[in-house]
Length: 176
Image (cartoon, rainbow, N blue to C red; front, side):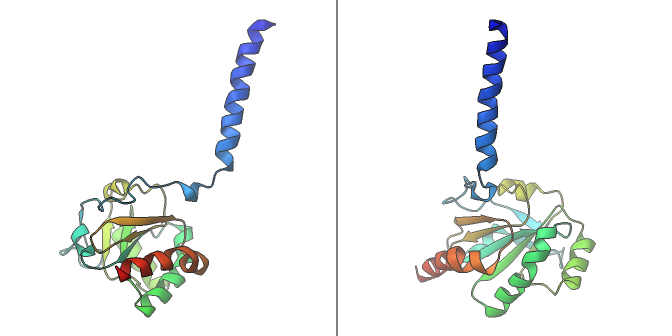
């Protein structure tokens, strides 16, 4: 009888840890990059592959980097809001097209309302996204004037998140 108690005890402990883990919101996983300079990268641009997009493009202005892909269903839901933001000129929005074929990404943007991004980097193999700690798309980063990551949002951008969280951070950073 005692030999069954040890495995049962281990099972109960593991079940408790699993239960706690399942109650956590994956969108609240903090990024270890917050407060650190944006990872260095150089990527070909989506529309102009002969030109590059790099972390140096963030210098001197508060920016958003939105990581997206044509195969991402949630990216489709956030795209109309990104188009609205781009039209308001509140912040420079950069795109990181993640693990996607160039033609698919260009077709997707045309199909779903246009291009809200100032520049889009084409990260075909996903290495740059991995350097940024991306584990799913969409993800959006707020980057300050010095190129430091100040906030990471996991999931689609929506007006509620924008108004309650991102906009106050951006306004504070723009005033500095």
